[in-house]
Length: 439
Image 1: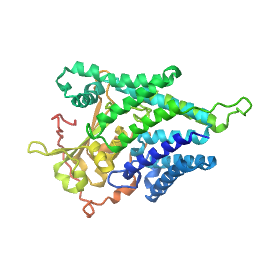
Image 2 (image 1 turned 90 degrees about the vertical axis):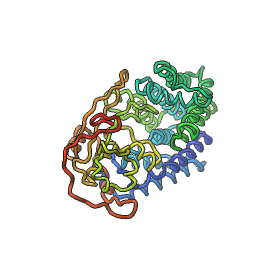
Image 3 (image 1 turned 180 degrees about the vertical axis):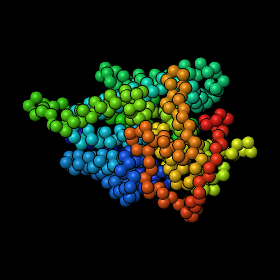
Image 4 (image 1 turned 60 degrees about the horizontal axis):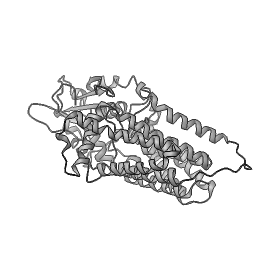
């Protein structure tokens, strides 16, 4: 039987993560929902409600039940329901949800000794891939120095006055620490020390990302707390049951399958650089190098947008009739989660806006590739108007279209959006940095 304490901690944190990100898992209409497959765009909202009810109930049963067949079944129901929810909206492919689905599947189908080993390998891969993704120009020259400035600010130092090279070299200590922790957890001789190092690492992240630092969303903080508990219970305290020589040591088919799944999960991130693996599936955490889009909307169509979207637009001025739409801020304020870091998903958001509100040429979208690891440079493609934007979805094998439920979007003040004829003109937008077609 799996460790009761670890299973209860896992279920408790799962429920807490669903609670602090609850709106994301409902059939909300504050942001377009982009399913993974086009056939799912027609599904009604009650499917989401049913799936989230099954997921939450299954987590609860997994944590409180001591009957092995019951909690194993509950874990599989949780994994299935959460996969359904993720398939209905790519935004829900949060890294913590991915990890919880994997662990539920492993614990439900494997005996404790094997389950412990597979989960440890996955945790180690998270640390290692996350560290590798930060040995990158963008992190070392943007988010890394921001982490450093926040941390040194607690002791009265102003690291932003240091040279850029000094900040970058010191910021490299963050991913280096992650990498050391991951390798240390993998090796049995250093595992105990690495557990304390992991707990220290996440305490440091909580200090930087918490309310006295960068004030990140609760889901980010809760997941870091879970990693602290996980480090102790899974690597230090958790002792896998040794199988007596007289017991049946034959493997079950489900255990072979879990080993294969774990192997794929660990190897698949290698393909991220080739464009096959999404950034979060590759465990690129706190990494700003991901692909993205910049969206600009013309002042003349602002009255078509509901107030909750207008609040996410940049300030206007007399010299520039275009406003940048901050899709990342829209996600944080509306759903309390980071935006899914894929240009595919964010193009789907822009396309849904263009189609729903008849924006015509009043929307300009710049698609940016993942940045070059050594120079930070990105390839860019600009789409002028809704017709060009529709062509942007052609290269993607995964769906870019929003669920049709979003077409019934109502203004948050209670009035339905009017559908006017689209505005047609050809003016290049100038975004915040003053460059044409860039954000």
